[in-house]
Image (cartoon, rainbow, N blue to C red; front, side):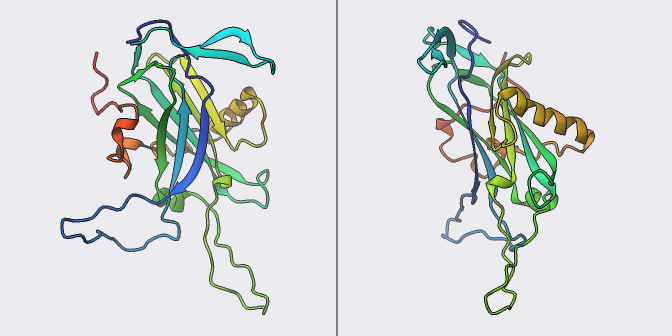
Amino acid sequence: MLYGREPSFGDIKVKLSFEHAPTYRTRTGGVINGSSLFDNEQYLAVEAIYNPGVVTENVVNRKGKQISSPQAASNAWLDGVEMKVLVAYPEVTGRTRKETVYGLFSGKTTFWSIRLDGKKHTATMFVPPQLLARYTNIRARSPRKSDGKIPRSSYRLSTRDFFVEVIFTTRDGKELGRGYCHVDAARTVNEKDAVFRHLESRLGSRIVEGAVLSRDLSPWALINPERYDFISPPGGTKK
C-alpha cells in the first residue's frame, strides 16, 4: 500500500562486480569446502542504488537537470515493489562487442515494503558462477611467453563482458525508475531500452529465467540484512 504521493526512485545507479561468496565455518572452526569445479568461482553481483520517495519537481538546475526532493510524508511506504533485472551475457564471443552474440539472464526481487524516505537504498542480485560457466562462451586466454612457449591458460571474466538493465515497478506494473550499466552502444535511456527490447524479442523463450538470484537466495542472505529493504518471503506481501 502507498501512503502519500506516488514517488519515483530517483536517478538509479547500477554497478557490476565479481565477488567471492562469504565463507562460513563450523563450530570447530573448520571451513566447509567442496571440490573446485570452475576456473571462475566468483558471483557476478548487480548492485542498484536508488532513492525511494524522491519527487521530481518542475525545476531545473544550471545544467538543465531536473531537481528532485524527498517525499514530504515522513511515514510513507510502498508495498510489493518489484526489482526486475536483465543481464546480457556473451553467448557467442566475437572479436568485438559488435560481433558478439548475447544471451539474457533474468531475475526478480519482490520487496515486502520500502520506506519512501528519500534516502540512499541499495539492492543486490547475483548470477552464480555455475551459470556463468554453463552459459557464457568466454574462452581461456593463453598468451605466448617471450620464449615462444605457451603458458598455463588463464580464465578471467570481466564485468565489461556484460551489460545490465534494472527496473523498479509497483505491484500493478507502474515504473518507479530504471538504471543501466555498460550499455556502451547507447546514450539515452530510450536507446538503452531499445537494446534490451531487441534482445528479448530475438531470444524469446531462450532467456535464462531465474538466473539472477535475489539477495535472500544468495550466500549474502545473512550479511547485514537490516541494511537492505526486506524481501517478501514465499507467499507474497502482507495485505
